Length: 135
Length: 135
Length: 135
Length: 135
Image (cartoon, rainbow over all chains, first blue to last red; front, top):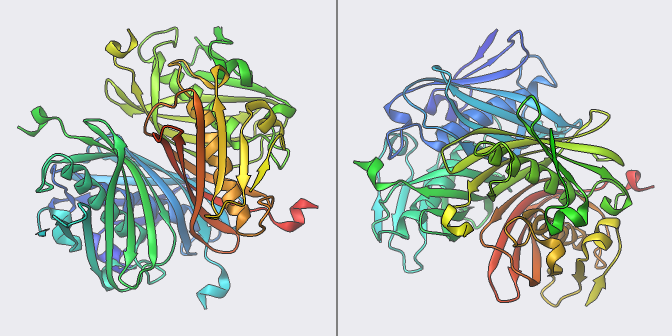
């Protein structure tokens, strides 16, 4: 299992960790929720939840191309459902590719608290960044 | 016009500013995008974009109840479409209530760069937090 | 297992069948796709796919209240992802409640062709129709 | 202004009419709602509403390529918000392209009753069908 930490500005700001190489093949993105991630209701901010779901999903897309999970995928569209409040403690998003072709992927993700509570789910359309754009 | 700054942990972390009291009645949430808000592609992280759209939307809901925009609304479900890359500079989300009843509101938002580029749009279902839960 | 047929105008028009009472507890809505359900590409019209997903989802909501699956639930918001073309033959949507409280439910559904192909998935917010509105 | 009628199996079944060539450049899809289009609540079935929004959106995509609105676009993902009940009478969906590139388009639509009521809104991702697939 490999951890990806501090790769981008947003990752350093928010503090989440991306994991690839799990036996089940699924990408993960986790965060130890503290006071910096809370909203007006003193629970996990929905936008932070979306960041975790989005990163797990994008990494799931990358894993269809390379085992290191580093091939960039862009989020085209994403729907998030907020099922329960996210409390302090570790929350983990797991992303799974549900369909799609070579460049466009449908990817779903679930975000759970370490106590098992399902906090949020998402489904999105992701697109592999064309190679010529990466040069 | 009133600015809401540093109200929550997430707001202090990310650095966005909420504005209420504009003549047009619409809620705004803006951010001066710098290196801390960028993703692997060196553009605005989609999750940060969602935070801004979500805050503008939730505040738009609050404004239907009180002019200070402080009545809490929960995000039930939210769809974001990522139309263009968000660059460094000021980006502003504007939220508008499109329908709904007393407690459930349909709210849309647009996020634009200061150069006019439409970066992302969202539509969501928001729910007023029951008063008994606020005590 | 109970079949619900010809209950509404839309059901009679389109010809789908709703099933409740399966051992797994999940609601189903199936349709034998023929020429009347095809789009410009000669595959299942996305809107017909959505009707099936929506009915399976609404019925899944009803089953949380009564075993006959007849308690009405309204669709508040629904996102559908179109993964693969739907061909002629039987297609079946299965709906599952993923969360929510007493009146608002989060419900997901999958639509598959009888050959196993996953055609479309959906996630939505549903609301139980208040009793006073039913009189 | 040109009307497209009875083009596909679904269109003949449901009875909607597509309009292109309006001065404002926007695609329309309307339906005279009668008993065949109603749900358990005796209002417009959400799935029928989605069909209208989807057709107006797909046609809006086609209009970016040809003035006849016939170039096929596939729906990749679509979110619909159900704001108000749709009653009998004429309901019209208007679709507008909000962004995207050459092949992928972001398209929004609104469905209104002839009395002006906003019944539903949608936002979706559409993709132009590759020419080689059309042969």
